[in-house]
Length: 266
Image (cartoon, rainbow, N blue to C red; front, side, top):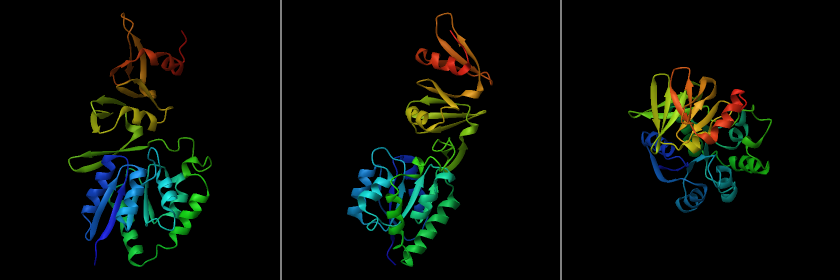
């Protein structure tokens, strides 16, 4: 049998590598390419003719749905959506794709989705998916834009995938005490443990719930409920002290906003 031709589309390099590693374990699979943007995905689909696409929904510029819209539902290869949306916002994707994966996903969940996709492709049962994709696009909005689809915290990061010694560990966001920058990496501080991920602080700030996390400094994000005190040095510099005793600098430009959250008035 000819190998199954697979295209991976995700703007996060770690996510692309994760899928490459998992697909590398599957027999009879050829990864024909990877793409880090919607534009690159459109070009790859047209030029490489993949039989299966792992498609990230949330990408800057053209989203996964924009890719489907431009390719056209009738010409879109069988698709497994990859998304950070929670379960409340996935109904449309569930109907329109072979399957979907919620980041971060474990090996077992990947295998379940992939085997289902391979079986449908081999049985040539994917034709009806084009109608579902067409209905999804006709709705004119993604599940993330459906205000009734999920609770208010919808769309914010709930879990972080951390690669350690060849394994991927899932760290719930609710367990993170604070995050610090270390060059191109971010360090997640969870109790007495530290996990390193390759992610920009700006991206993390945008994806974390602002009611739970606050960026006190360009190099530090703190879980708000853990702040014990706001400190001011004689020289006019500020810092926060957390319940565990950790002290983190606070940018002067962010002091006023932090004081408002703490209920302090000047």
